Image (tube, rainbow, N blue to C red; front, side, top):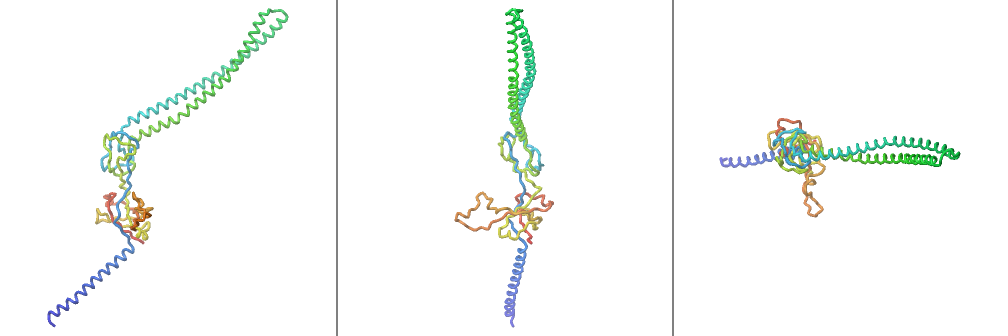
Length: 348
């Protein structure tokens, strides 16, 4: 057999061997991937998330002080911004003056009631004195009438005693009419006092509201975290409801992974998760499936799809899944909300 024939035969044998090797490798890779995806679900449509608390002005005013720096770590209750409070101080003073005026009116009305009640004793004493005067005048009248009948006195003397009796009776009647008048006056004064007193609660509410508005001129951090997205400058006029800055809670990070709806069949709460952050490709973080969103992401979009329009194109939807990170480590300290990650769920 010549050398050329040997070389030709050798080439014919090598090619099938290489082809068989390639097929075996492809088969092994395919089987490996098949068994892998039987117990794993993964997606790279995921990112780091965190609770972001907006700091919103609850009253309007000019910014007087800014007590934070960009990306500063703050604690809940730390003062961030102070607004010019002179307008609100004046409103509080006006409310307090109105409350004091109402309370003074109530005190004056109560004093009037007490003074009127004290007049009752005087009026009743006047009635008793008038009764005594009537009794004496009546006795004198009876005696003088007998004397007149006996012609012991003159008609003029009898007329004087008669006039005194009638005067005493008129004085008694006048004194008796004063008692109900004073009682009625007391009732009127008490009603007026109650009317004044009903104004105390609204005026007190005005004072409390003015104090509350004044307290809002000191804007504090609603939660612990990092100050971000600053949108306020010194001297700026801010309006009620205007967002000034955001507080990013970097102590409670989690992952939001958007899995395809076809993958949801295999996912369960509590399953372990491997997380790789694009920013740190050589590091892996552990996590746990915590919860599933109540609807697909498309339903929360600004313009959710409406398949009833007739232009229907079936698109695989994605369901947001919240993944809880394990205890904080040195690696997780560098994580920031919005970072892209890849997650692999170990399905059971």
